[in-house]
Length: 396
Image 1 (cartoon, rainbow, N blue to C red):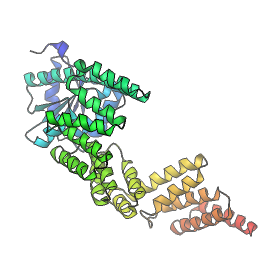
Image 2 (cartoon, rainbow, N blue to C red; image 1 turned 135 degrees about the horizontal axis):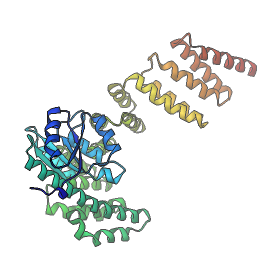
Image 3 (cartoon, rainbow, N blue to C red; image 1 turned 120 degrees about the vertical axis):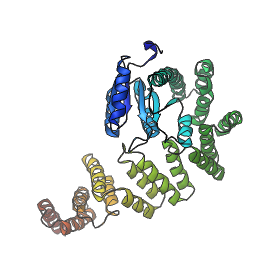
């Protein structure tokens, strides 16, 4: 029997099955382990942000984000006491080889099969708690190493890792690799990753890293082959999906990039505005029609109005009227005939009028006419139009 000192005192259960929650609660209460249950992604995120959990037990097929996706989101938390929680993935017969591969790539994840038994669950929780402590030691070494990097002392950063190899074990090489990448020492980083792959050719994290390095070395074709191999072996790695979307843009393959962007949007229910960053990246790369297509496939007209209108108002409040105009105009190309665009046209008119030149006033007038064509009874627009026309008449 596992000693109580080796067990967590409180765990977060992320599972929408009440029967699982009740059985686990009954099982663990006897061992003075509190089970806090989240039945959906929003409540899981809220609870994780509000409380400190030593271990999280997450259903593999949880929705709308799979369990391994939840792990990645939790580990991205800025608070170390939260992101370093021990992670357990609970799976029935639906576990695939790709799930195991992604779990191995992410590292420090315990898998447990359903149905649970006392012995099996207590053993897994004990291992997860032990891993949490091990990960905390690694995180401390990593933090101090990267602090040295921020101060520009690369040698001190590398020296700190080497001095703590006994403590962090097999994680030492990946940490060194990360430091060389951070320092943009690409040839040296390539040597390190090749050593890692000689020892373990199926190391997906190392394959992924080699792809990043080759891309920086201008070997785009080789980089693409490797990252696609890693993605096939262990799909749904959020960082990799984002890297692939960017890589495909650099390779002038916008269709492939958009496909990855859609995948990332689906796997990021906690980031509703992420799609706008992707839309902008497509525009910045010159793929305006792809940006419009992505927007229309993933975003409702009301979301477009809200996002760009809010951004424009923020810029207007700080007297950045040109930037505000850019935001308002950006919204209009996605759903040009949407009736609620009258709000955009009205704020666009204000931003133009605040610049006070005759040309801006003319553009403000044109925007107000479009606003009133969509909302003929909008009194504020009527009043502003009268003011602007009077000003233009006086200037003439």
